[in-house]
Length: 205
Image 1: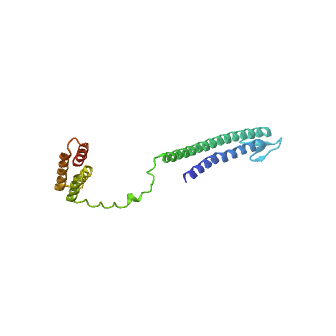
Image 2 (image 1 turned 60 degrees about the horizontal axis):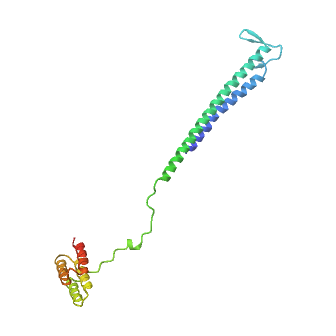
């Protein structure tokens, strides 16, 4: 809508100077070539015309008509130039408006878009599966003792650590004490003791 109004202003401004200017130039050309007249009546050579108490002959009237025609042509040319200038100015303003509009559009296009939509895996939307209940601390410690008796110290330490990890309060403390007992049985020289001590510390602290 704004562009339409601006275009109409350009056309209207141009026509505003073009039409009157052409009419004035046309009238000037007609006056220059119409010959002498007296009160809008044509004159022939030898005729005389009374103008305000002054009698003028054919040549005087023809000269006046020629000068009047030149004057009208000059005025019409000025009007044409003014109309052309006005049309050019309005056209330039229209082009500037379009350039500003294009710049705003480009600026909006360059603005960072929001995060692109992505497919959400079912694993992220589905409710988390319930964690199976931890084994009773006594059962874990009995299994750990049995593993140590059969010479599987790795399994015994793992089961005791699992008891510490999955219990709290008194049950955790019992599991911790059982691990300390295993450390004494294996001795500080056993590399598994140092490794298990680090893992125990990470669980407790």
